[in-house]
Length: 126
Image (cartoon, rainbow, N blue to C red; front, top):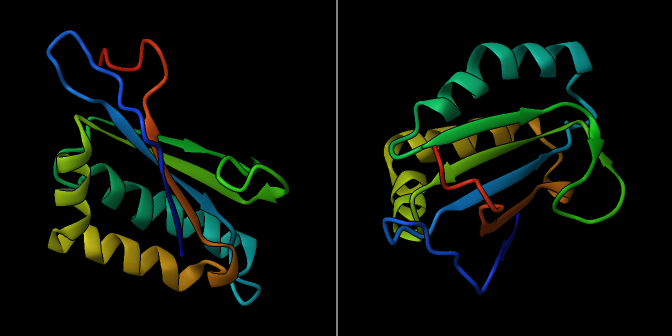
């Protein structure tokens, strides 16, 4: 698992440092594409939306890998939080650990990438 953390945090009007966690999704070779899509639609997507403190959840279909900067991925998700403490609390919660463990079981561990970065301009209006 690779974690890339941006050094700068943007401030919102309320003083919050809105950040987004981006996870590149590369299914394992043992996981057929149809099974992977069903798992995201029925289990993983809803679980991600229910993480404590998630202010916005965005799913992307197959396309360029947003974390690795090269290659393609089977999909990506963005989880937006009010700031780094809220992100950390969500991932350390029982729901966060279960979410990461469940998605890791169906992803290729050699290509499992996560990135944390400031939300793009206008992204703080959630």
